[in-house]
Length: 162
Image (cartoon, rainbow, N blue to C red; front, side):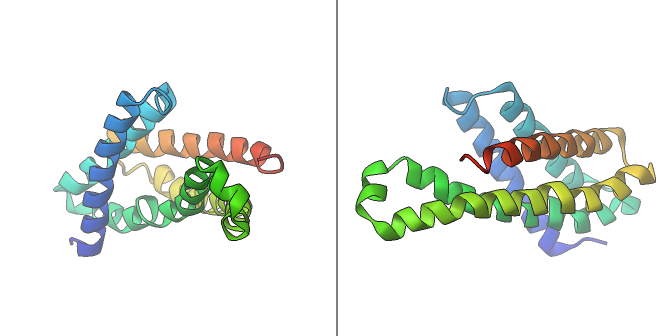
C-alpha cells in the first residue's frame, strides 16, 4: 500500500537533506557534528522508508507525513527570524519587519516545543515500542527523537532571552 502524498513528502525531504548536508559541510558557520549527523540520519531515514519493499512497513509512509512534513512547520518562524536578523538595518528602519521578527521568536519556540517535542513523542514512542522497525529505522527514530528533546531543551532555555 503506497501513500502517494507521503512519497512526495519523502522525496522532497530527501532532496532537502542532501542539499542541506552539502551546505552544512561547505559553510563553516553551519558546520557542526550534530547538524551533519542530523542531515545524514534524516536523509537516510527518508531513503529507507522510500525504498522499503516490505508491505508490513507501509505504516511508516503514513507516519512520514508527520516526521518529514508537519514537523517542518516549526521551521517557518525560525527561517523568518534567521533571515531578518541578518538585516539589522531593515529591522531598525521598519516597524513592521521588526514586529514580524519579534513575533517569529516566541512563535518558533512555541511551535517547536509543541510539534517537535510533545507531539513528536506522542507519535514516535509508540512506533519505537512496537519493536517492528528494522534496526536502521529504529536507530534513526531514536536518534532524531533525542535530537528533538535536546533542541527542545535549548529552545526552552533560549526562548525567554532570544
